[in-house]
Image (tube, rainbow, N blue to C red):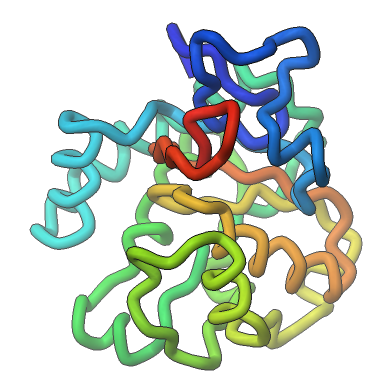
Length: 211
């Protein structure tokens, strides 16, 4: 992220006093993430939160284009190794949440990013088959347990052998994106790179302002 030292694998902002020798946060030193790279357009803060909430809950659909273009720029600048034509896949909502909200903000961002790069979008490549309670207030292990088996690939042939750009609006603990990456790779996807609009600082990642 511009102006902020961040982990080269998970993009979590690193504490200024952290050891930057290897460019990794404590968690990624202990266990490498399941994805093959991550980029974030910005850190989640007052300004970015307002933008995210305007898109997510206020129906400000016009924001998705500029947000997606910024995500595409950051993805390119991240150095992630991608083929000319990866498949762009949004993080899914459960159908009840989709019905109540009326749209999936990650689909809108995926379309904005894909349009900026001339890539294809597969809005239904992932499906959330079990509704989970709100994940706020849970730590990473609790989130992972809650999400186990909740996200699947309904048609494996749609992603088998493909390189994927997985799109989400905000990455907090990374549990949701991890569940998506595992489902995609179990279905035969090759490389999966995560692109999010905002990355949340989380103090419970020791030694870094972690997710």
